[in-house]
Length: 75
Image: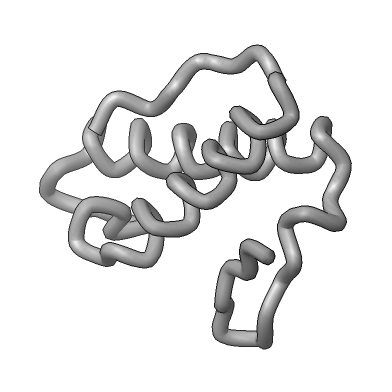
């Protein structure tokens, strides 16, 4: 079972729809892009916080398991 631990508890990503997982993965990508576009004001601090990477890896693993088509984040 793959669980992502968040400040508000644990989320079982296996219970989310594929579309929901794709949207969450895209949100990580958007936050990373925003941080990289504004290096002096990194609002989300994606690269500084390893939880972002771990969470995106868990989502990607589940998407791979489901055979979903998506573009991987280039870290």
